[in-house]
Amino acid sequence: MKMDGPVRSRLASLSDFQFGAVATETIEDALLHLAQQNEQAVQEAAGRMGSFRETRIVEFVFLLSEQWCLEKSVSYQAVEILERFMVKQAENMYRQATTQLREKKEPQNWKALKEQLFSKFILRLVSCVQLASKLSFHYKIISNVTVLNFLQSLGYAHTKEELLESELDVLKSLNFQINLPTPLAYVEMLLEVLGYNGCLVPATRLHTTCLTLLDLVYLLHEPIYESLLRASIENSVPSQLQGEKFVSVKEDFMLLAVGTIAASAFIQNHECWNQVVGHLRSITGIALESIAEFSYAILTHSVGANTPGRQQPALPPLEARALRAAPSSNT
Image 1: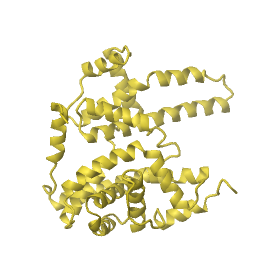
Image 2: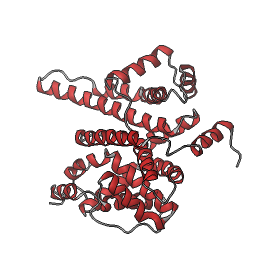
Image 3: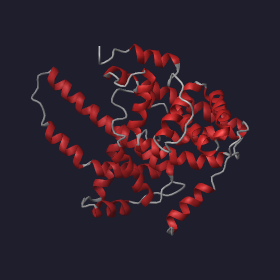
Image 4: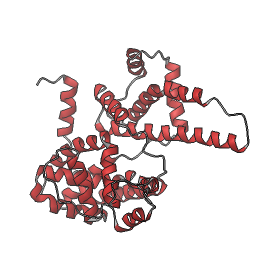
């Protein structure tokens, strides 16, 4: 199969990814910082988060990032920026409606607001990709001309001013906090630590497989997490309350990272799987059962081959008990 220059250069950049070049003290500090960020994100997880990581949206972002020859971290960052922004938009609309009902004011034309939100969605999505590229300025920044030409090819006639206003809307909505952590950052940090801890599977080999599986998790976000939810509550029909409690698990990037690495290790060398999982448990404190269950879910939605034996619970014991204690929709 013949590959064009940009694709070939992207693959070359992935193969040149280096581990073991950073001092252990720096890695320890960075890992601690990521763990603190993750804990805060899990605690702050709201009931509506995750509703915009739909397959079609994620696929659009991934394909656009590939077309523009952006590195993988940019595509994940763009998805997370778009997710946070759309959640903020939905929260603002809900807040306005609640205020109007409480104050018995004339309701706004919500159909018009919804249509306005939808009509600008592609513009907002592209703005999120462009903003993510600016965070990775050492690699490649997408110019306004490139963005406008792309939008024009889809039949959207926007001006440079409208593009700048769109970026500013996203920035203001997120209080200019767009340098969001992504699961890839957790994966790469844990691979660094695994390399220093004497992991039998080379970090570079795991990294390549992790990128593929992480893409898969993003594209199959709902079915993978739905299977985890059913396994954690031992019920094929979760209640709404159980689903809401499970949102914090969806925002746990450290759990996603260890599950992705464990699944990658099984694909690369299943005989070393137990050693890798043991290292991940020691590094993160996440239960072996949780790592096994997550890697099982990823593998069954990807290769579908013989996978690590299923173990319960899927979540750390306290979280699993809390979910099981939530009222079932059948009662």
